[in-house]
Length: 233
Image (cartoon, rainbow, N blue to C red; front, side):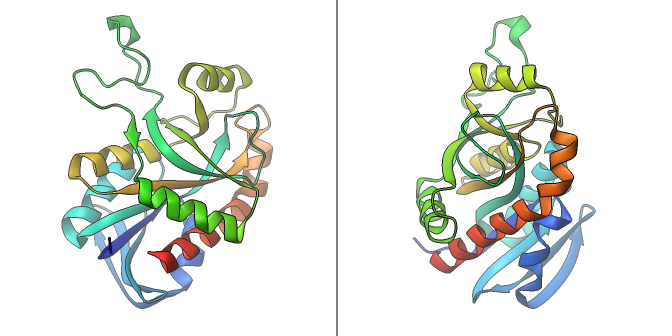
């Protein structure tokens, strides 16, 4: 399969600056308060954008990419907090699926993370995009790339007890604030996606210390993976 426009989303400016610097024939537009840059990245047609933090921003951003720019594959890149204890700061997680961990209707008998009355609440990433991301990771960052479930919620997690619960109850590899909403919009539109997250902290009590120190470094690693992915698409 070949792709037309590839949508590349980051949540924060640090997550897209390196990509933006390499965008040729750039044109910039705004829709719904979000800035979109479209042009050529390594000769491929891409639309690059910073969604902003949180699930609503990410969902709006993704739908605009589909409706206005005809994106037919979406890659979400950036940083996350590690939940799986085997992960270390700097490791990369490539999503196999994603769940909104802050959806909690357990009082009505639904498992945590389940959106009531919908057939799907855990959104699978595209198998081909996963494979391409894994190949890219092996080339640019060997031994530090893993696949796993991404957990998303409108919360910055910094509590060891919460982290333990996310891992044991939902089987998450990492936690962040946007990916599963991007995945849901892609699922609803029939668009393939994958989430690439670099671990900037351990999502525990030290998060406020680690996050600032490692965000830029982690974003650089995500950039390297996405660059190699685009070359292979």
